Length: 304
Length: 295
Picture 1: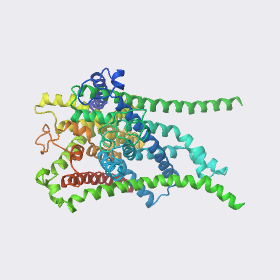
Picture 2: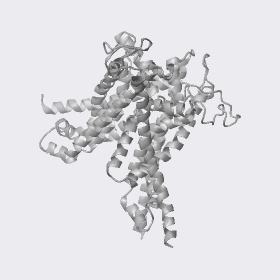
Picture 3: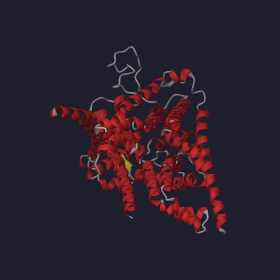
Picture 4: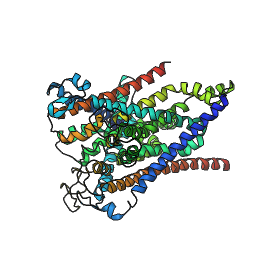
């Protein structure tokens, strides 16, 4: 066969594959939304779930997911950011750094169920807490720490060296330079990374089954904070939305388990879409902001 | 005066420095703790419960009630489903990477990249649920059987690892110097000849890393696979027959067993096997990276 014909055939194949993947995503999102149609119903979003009767809602699960997300971010963002700063600014190349990188790679590749089981050993059994939100949050922190550290590190390394040198030359210490100069310029990239991590945290289930549990007590906001029925108590069991979907599928005995599961999946997908859009919007807005100031500078230069 | 200055310096440098160094240490200690705890617990089935390691990794007889803990079925199930997923996913992912870099970078940047990001973002339980409600009935109608099968697991996983392989392969292709492509064009090759004979071999290292990372993700994925693979403790006879994986049995049985029993210990050993295998993948990736760096 003529090599030009072969070339054309392969170009065609690449187009088909690319279009197929786009259609596949479209199909998946369409099917979830179609099957979970009506998920925005307020009585579903805020209602209590029932173990035996049809018509239950996902109010508790939704609250648990958001609360778990916030607690996890509070723990994992400072840790990830700190580790990123350390890797980018302070760590010296050598055996130690190599070992730290091996640890990060290992941590990043841990199967989430293994992290969940580690959580069961340490945060549930060894501490005697039982299934808790904090245990779950710590387990997902382990899952997300490597990627947060990497995002922060590469964002900091992307800041031009000349800017840092100017600050150091003016007599600032390295730490002052990092806090006042480097971090603000690296912030857009870091925040985009954190929002994307938030999407992953929101959808995580395997690491939570054995750390945050499959149950939620009947919540009462008026109860004392140390009481397991207070929604804000981090030492209470909490079933998140993603875990709820899994539970409904594997052991759900409510007659409308399938419907609740697909509606919950639709809610999850919408949340992930929102997180993705936010990250995208945020990075383009900030990029525009920076480019805009560049344009202004040119103008003032021209005027002068 | 000098003392005053050094206190200020101490405040403005060492506190911050110590804090971020601690963050680095936390990562190292957590990783070591995970290995230590899982290993310490996983080894008990051999030291305390008297199960033979050899039997565990070579026997297919998993009947905890009779004291048989052969885990070969789970190991084989995990291996087959993840290798199958990579075989389906890798060619598609590499084709996507080529498309994004050489055929239509604009469409790649505007459409394919966001599509891949969304595919990563979809939670694994949602993939599992889609598998149960769309894929399993479809397989049941087309191939007979129950639908819950090795094939269902392979298909779901191949979609899940596609973005990992495609993104890494695309990065690797972008790193190939454009001069190579131009030289190839200059010698009269068509686009396909340049891509297949010059660009892909030059980007082999990065593409291989992507494939191994995809394999590692597939091996460790728990819920999506567990929901569609059928969880039958049997070696699969065909693509359409159900089987079970390491992650699946851990997800389902860990809460049904009592701490300290031989059955429970055997499950922890499976977790240890999972950990060891995921560590092996990391070593393979590092090996690929180092070998390429020396050349």
